[in-house]
Length: 615
Image 1 (spheres, rainbow, N blue to C red):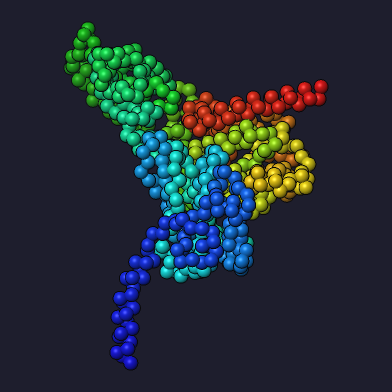
Image 2 (image 1 turned 90 degrees about the vertical axis):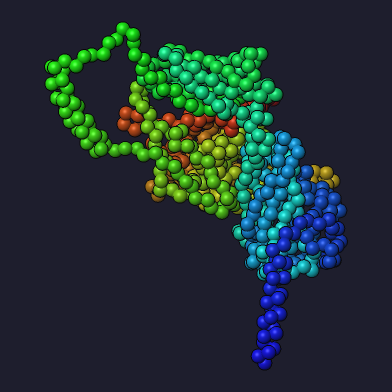
């Protein structure tokens, strides 16, 4: 008996490395046919599904952006022979990672997504669906992978790494949300997908600083003082970048000095020197230099203008009387300094802090570390006094969650403005934005109204973008009018429910009314209009809550979201790049400004057409 046990033990010891090696393998997609998947052939364990497969199986094309994906891939592609195969619960994948592949195109990146399946429900796992969506835009790419119907994975296979096909042609410096969904989708819509937000590389990261016009900046700066004049020498951009002019700005005591610089490349192609005059002695200037290009990176350096000994000035001789007075003066000064230090210690001080935000695994935001305004971007100041850095409240460990509701009835230009607003708030206002345009898979699965109800319940704040179309009540289209031929030509309808925004606003209005009747806090709810809309576009039920005009009230919106006072005794809060004059300097701010302008033009044209139609 003992000998038999030892034999079994040795066999298990020999098999364990083989099992571990098998469970840690990387699985890449295969080319298979749907017939092979349905029949359970041995050569179709992990198969990519193409648009041709979908068309052959369902008889119509899916939307171009969704590639081979369909809303219910398990039921549509595997459930005809055995509906039970798609009814089991499968939990979300783990360890979703994004890997950047070598890409010869200097303007784009190619990525591949990898993940591990969950232990829970792994025996019933039928495949994965991987979608890629651009933040601040509507572009979507999607890939579908299925196992053959007879495959049943073991718990040990949860250590396997599955990979997607490459996603090519992603523009540099862009943000994306990648979502990996386990199939079949359960009836209870939770924990069945895993999302991760990532950014493609910058031009400088991929190609080197010397090959990127937008990212290039002077790396070598030398400052030399000659009398009261400052000489600055910096390295020029490579000739192939085509940068012909530069600018420099210096700040001190609330005064800015701007200088345009145009080097003569025929004399020196590697460096250039320029002179700064009219600088105050004994003053420390903070200066910037950059190429004279849109969104160019600025190089910061300091210039300390030392005091110059004048020729006519002679040092004072120490007379006996002065020698007697000097110790008395020093003692007086020391007493004054001690008193001032004691008084200063009793006064409240604002301390510079960095707010580190906890990363949480949230739908479409897992692994997201939201950008927050840097400590030197938020300042209290007043005329004639130095600015003091303040910090965001430190009692919040996660960014505030903001749901944005809007009406799509005002056209695609208005929807684009809403998307750009969401992207700006997420990138530069330390806030997690929930927008149905960025969560299309979940909206399609839950239903638009159910999705809005869940987000209203889970969000910290709700912002309703009010426009003329928000009060429009369109009639539901007749279902008979949409024929089978139109369905085949148009593909699947992934559009949002035409009534969802109206119903969501009505639901929010009811919540506001109940909270007001009970005397509860209404700060969760906000309303806003863009510059092309009017205050009268705000529905009556939302007149009770705070409302803002965007983009002029971005600082007020930031104050509302983070509980930061805009004014303090003798000072005010200045948020660089969120102020009305500063936000457009950011790429996301410029895109928002342009989207609002285009939406305003489209809105005015629509109103003009409606007036002419009535005439």
